[in-house]
Image 1 (cartoon, rainbow, N blue to C red):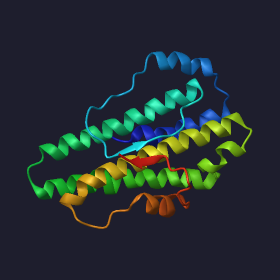
Image 2 (tube, helix red, strand yellow):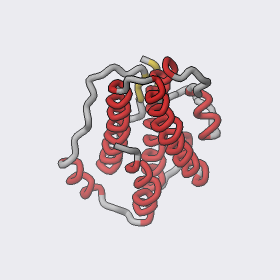
Image 3 (spheres, rainbow, N blue to C red):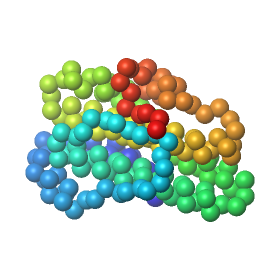
Length: 186
């Protein structure tokens, strides 16, 4: 499992969603065929984005969540099955420093270039733009959640300066956390 679904949404699907006014009924049908990946393990952090308000947003919310959860499950499986510290360091570098950080940078680039920060969500009257903001910020917060979860495991294996929630926001998304942060520590 990799994070290619995030790249697909950022590079292929999202521009198409904006150009074409895809009917919500199409996503209602797609939702019937889709189930959310469940995870019985313990999470140190949780995401509390507002509930998706259309079938299109529900669909993308599940797709993004499944992608990130699958990636995290694969990381944990490989990490827990690894017997050497060197291999665990390699896995942390591969999953966290290369893949997750790169997707955070890719998402931040799209959000910044189009000025689609969450603070603009209630300030626009264009439905397509509101949906794009919702989807992009769902990607953003799921990736930040993923980073923070893997970081918690990595700290014990590879002691170095990892970014915290505020620094991730400031450095990659050029914004500071507002009074309403969507990620909380459990």
